[in-house]
Length: 292
Image (cartoon, rainbow, N blue to C red):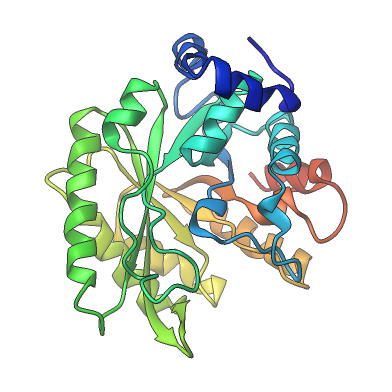
């Protein structure tokens, strides 16, 4: 049952079991395909209340528009899959665009952007059993650690248990670690080489096994530091693209250099591909694929 976007609400209201049926018949593929690289489009921002792109604070709030952009990205050659929360992935299942794609479920979205409890990023999304039931291919968890916040210890423990649960089901989990701190009422990630190095060391050691753990890492403030930073772990890693600022070519060059490093297996990029500052979604995606 491949639907159009206007049909989604009617099917959800009248035949909610259609989602499980679509998941059961989805054609799967290995995590790493013939190219040996991963290109994943990220669209899990809305569930954390992070809807802004550039100067438009609610750019991602139009769900039909977002789905169209994701479908366009998934249709481009070299795009391997998508990372999103249950609501978005289930829409994409009903639309029939996930066959032969890698599907990553976003697991913790409780740290709402700008909230007083933003650092308390609880697991409010996919559980390991949900990902297994839906035959999805992997999960992703955000691991933000503030040395000045005693609550970060609970975050570490809960992340470790989720890693154990995923490994018990032989499901890869992409851990996105940051050392961060409160600045002016908001949370700021520290992208210095030392901070990213420490975050990799901490994330790599979580859980009873790291056999199914991947890392999802930012490029450091100085991209020339990435080779040394990535020596911290033998775990496979993908780069977190982040937003592309005014210097678009400079950002692409930073990604290109980091993608040459031996532990880096691919790229996960969200808003900068789905809502490019210049050009179309097709052009932005094709440029990112070209970096691989």
